[in-house]
Amino acid sequence: GGDGCLGHSSEKAEPLPTRVEALCQEHIVAVHAGVETSAAVSGDGRLWMWGSGGWNQLGQADKLNRLSPCPVGIPGSVRQVACGAFHTTAVTEAGEVYTCGVSMYG
Image (cartoon, rainbow, N blue to C red):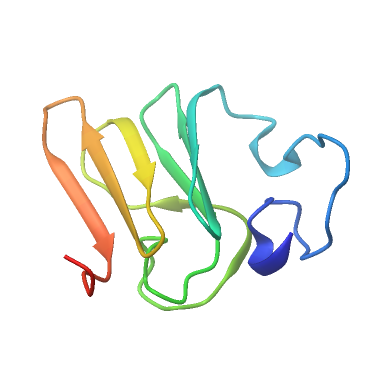
C-alpha cells in the first residue's frame, strides 16, 4: 500500500495476502505494523523496517520512504519491536530500549 508499508517494492494495494519477497531468506520471528510503517525481527536479532519514513520512524538517517524491508542498525540482537504513528521502539536481548521518530505528542 501507500508509502510502501506492505513491503512489496511498490505502493500498489494488495487485496490478498502476499508474501514479502525481500524477507524470504530471513527467519522472521516477530512483526508489528504502525499507521504507515511495518517492522519485522529476524531470528538472528536483526530489525527490518519499511513504509513511510516521514517522521524518521524507520531508523534510517533520512526521511525517505522504503518500499521494501531495510535493515536498521541497532547494536545487539533485537527481541521485540513496536510501531506507533510517529515512532518506533525496539528492545534488545540485553534489555536495552531504542527509539526513533518524533515525540511531538508526549
